[in-house]
Length: 496
Image 1 (cartoon, rainbow, N blue to C red):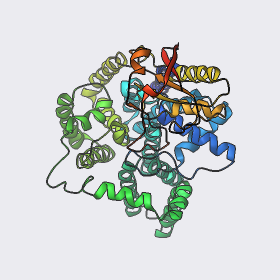
Image 2: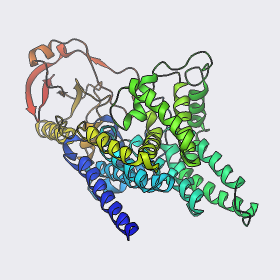
Image 3: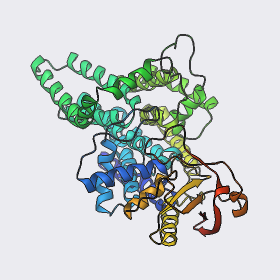
Image 4: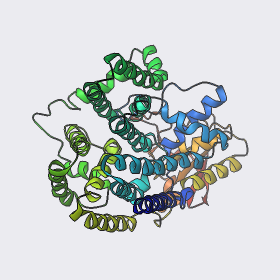
């Protein structure tokens, strides 16, 4: 009777947690979703592929210059196509992956450390300021936590419940992760080690040939998911794959690690365990040490494996010689929640109540730090309104444009809406146009006269893959024709 009541209570609690997670990610979604050049570029690529009835073989480029696999495009394309290419549909896919991660964490940690720990993991992930904000971002790294959770869940099902049908899920998930960011090569390494371990400790009734067959299923799923990208790489001499390894192992990657560790230790800690709740790295480092000691003393074999996985990943990232950006660490964040939840939700009798109270308090603290009440960006609405204004004013005449004081590295968030209208602004260096729009996205924009006096205006990147140099135009060669404010963006008009 008590077990049944406990089971029903856990069901009610996890439904409530998923409800909270959904609310935090869906509330003001259209206003808080970031829509800049990267998002616009992805949308244009998908739109053009759909119109030309072609299948993309590559996805967005890494910041280090290599092509990624197309998995991200495949994930968001159905939502964009069915919605008539409304960006909010792609944001909804990201939200679903974020909420799905909450549920997968609950199921996985419940298998590994018990249902109390599973609820703690789901609760902390649901209200984390970092994961809430990231879940709205239409970007390939955004879905890494979901597929990492799926990898972890598949491992738990295989190891704890002998559910070997998840071998294909494991292989397919790793294949998707490899296309989302190259840091998931570490996940591939862990998955291979795990699978070898499964083969080593297989049941006596399972022959080696059975394990090989399961291995073939996992490998087939991995290669199937990677096949479009591998075909592209084959046609291009595997240049991107070799470049990734050169980046990782060259002097700008992991080479020379014996002489210098990346000094941004605080940044790596904040980007991993710091995602659980916003505490300074100076607090997290000793806490992580305490968690390590508790896990080694009282943790199960699985809990020890996960904390070694986490600390190993942190160690590898600290050997990376270049600047470590936040999204490089997404492949470790889920592990952080699993490790900490396993301690807070421990089944040790003297610790359980205190751990659950601490988890509740930590979650409430995180909840107060979420961004749901921050000042809106409204990128989608404002960008589309600016494009409508430019199209209306141009009246069918050829024109060009650029953007100043933007949070974006490129102007593709505007080009996305131009593309949907089947309009292509003239290249800014082409003399065959007489109308130039300059869009200012910052609340503090210059006066028209001040802007007109600028002799060297740097043009914002207008390529899918931005280079280093873009044209500089002299506005003294143009005649100012007016300025219009549209949705808190200023559109300056120049004629020649």
